[in-house]
Amino acid sequence: MDKHKLLQTYARNLSNSRNRDHYLRMAGRFLDGCKGSGRLHIERYIESLRERYKPGTVNLHFRVIRRLYAVNGLEWEFTRGEAPVIKELDEYRPQLSPDIIEQMAYRAKTGKLYPEHQTFIALSTIYGLRREEMANIRAKDVNLRKSSIYISTLKSGRERYHLIPKEIKPIIAAHNFDQVFPLGSLSVMFKRIIVHSGYRDLKKVRLGWHTVRRSLVTGLVDNGCPLVALKAFVRWRSGEGEMAMPSRYYGNVMITAKDNEPVLQTARGDEEIFEKYHPFLQFWR
Image (tube, rainbow, N blue to C red; front, top):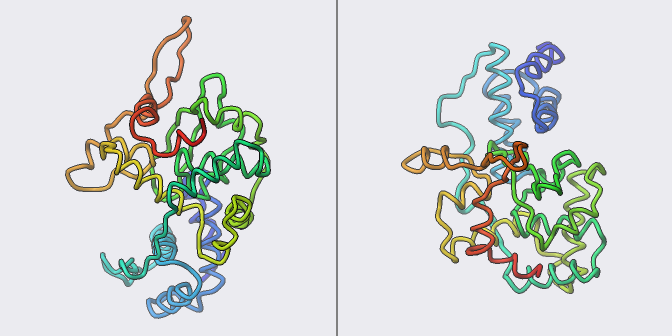
């Protein structure tokens, strides 16, 4: 295989989203690490990934490799449904209790955390952002005048604008979003936030930003947030089944006119979620 040519063809068939480089790195690792192009070699490569990554990440690698083969016209020996299965028992899905979330928010808003820690814990607890989504935010995505922030997703979710509530607006305004934070540094940052919030005993527990996301989703569900609104708020893709079309057509941006100028009224549904259903916004007041 001409690895360079295969990767070039794959690159040409990718969109220009911010996740492009992430997928390219995955494809490049496969081409460098796989000893052949047949099914057996792919299976061995996937098996090696299982030793390092969670089932969901292994599944994503598999889908990247499948597309690499498709755009290059290579024979794909797997049939539909043979992607790595993510079993319930394979997944470790911890979430944080509301009192821990409240303590982290308190430490942030009272200046007991580093400024960048304040920003990322605010983004995480308000929007349930994934680590990659936070790393992707740039200054051009934040419009303080319109109180909006644009979120680009990684796992085929809905890219969307969010409303910035007044409770965290000063923290967002003070942050330099053009400063790049590698994914690894964000993982270390979360551990430090846990420790600096007074939970040193949790340092050795396998926790990450997704624990906050799960806590937020649980809180929204417990508070009665409608499913369609919940899916839009946490940027889940539409999926399949009876909720697919309602989710797809649920508006995430409303365009109005103000002072004879088109104004983006960002995700007005966020206002209702913040007012009625959000479990953690109160902690920032």
